[in-house]
Image (cartoon, rainbow, N blue to C red):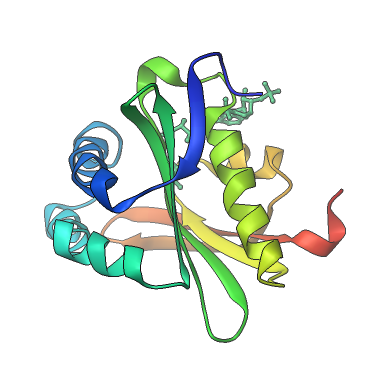
Length: 163
Ligand SMILES: CC(C)(COP(=O)(O)OP(=O)(O)OC[C@H]1O[C@@H](n2cnc3c(N)ncnc32)[C@H](O)[C@@H]1OP(=O)(O)O)[C@@H](O)C(=O)NCCC(=O)NCCS
């Protein structure tokens, strides 16, 4: 259950500007440990144009969490041609954390993968290894200093093996 007033649903075309704004805010708020050049690259990969292109593609997952018409979180993922699911970004605004909104976003994305007969989903994280462990992911690899000085964990989930 998401908290009252909150809703999880696919990002629509008209929501893309809100998604772009929240994405920028998330980079400032929670991803500023990455080196500046990497942040610039990520920013460039998620311009309004790139998000629009992602929305057109059937192999992309763009789901938002809403407090009425305020976008308060999102998950962005991708399905490869080799039937691998990838999660690129998961974010919930600080004031809304701890209310299972992240979990609902994650489960919605995982269900979309399942619906496409995708059983293996992967992501990389710096700070949230324990969070993903608590969500039935396992640690597949550890990459020390993968991005500048930043260590990253490759996390994976086998959707066949979870309830
Ligand atoms: C990661 C994030 C999306 C989680 O969102 P959230 O809505 O606060 O998380 P949830 O409320 O769904 O948490 C689900 C469970 O995980 C637990 N949890 C939350 N953060 C955790 C952490 N850092 N480590 C371990 N467990 C954690 C919660 O306590 C909850 O447990 P419960 O089911 O026993 O109550 C949010 O913290 C966030 O946006 N962080 C900054 C952005 C970021 O770094 N994203 C991850 C990039 S890979």
